[in-house]
Length: 320
Image (cartoon, rainbow, N blue to C red; front, side, top):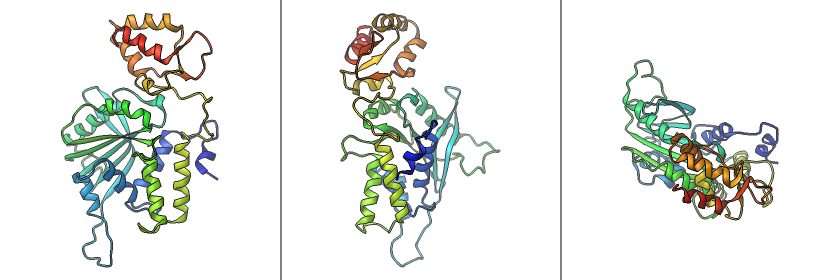
């Protein structure tokens, strides 16, 4: 029995908000899962090793019978934290927001659907966090989730699969002072490479071998179910080669099997017309390269589908 596959089998299924809720629950050391700091500690140590945040979390661990020097780490977690980016005049919502000891912010943007990715979103969120840290709004000064006077920020862009890491890295290319930024995927085709699933699997294995404090059997069962759910593409059914893949962003197309086909209404002629327009129309260029999700199929059903390799070559032909 997998509760996640059962819940997602309905018409509405589970969305990114639900998955973010599970992630936030696992990262909170004071929730009732019995994992303590394990998930938060391992995620930070893998992505931000030897940083002040990593040292802060590791310094709060406790082992042994001496209680005097034990220090309880202050972790506040909020889902859907709203920030405002002055530069773009946009309100953004960060999926998982974590404030640690009132000194560090760890923010996570979670994407389990390729089609939900939006160019520039994570940069707006990072800028919004930094803007908030500089604004002493008297009305929100005592809000436990405000960023005022925080100097150290850590941002994670969490994508569905490892073939989306290239896109995520490009979105995070801008450099920000006092902001550490890293991409990671929920699953990785190479099981030895870092992913959220690998981190959770290591916790299960270490618990079984007595290398960490005991973890309740209910939590182990839930972790196994959640890992299976993530490995199955956050879906209730098993994927197959004949299954129609997700919609993909333009940057993800180079990671798809080049013998597959990408959908474009009107075929090659329509694509060339749009690209010609994009040379002088920045909105059209933005739409084609960043905003439009492209549907992929294995077999070509009609002339509205272009082989991925040919599709990308047409873009190069027009200078994109």
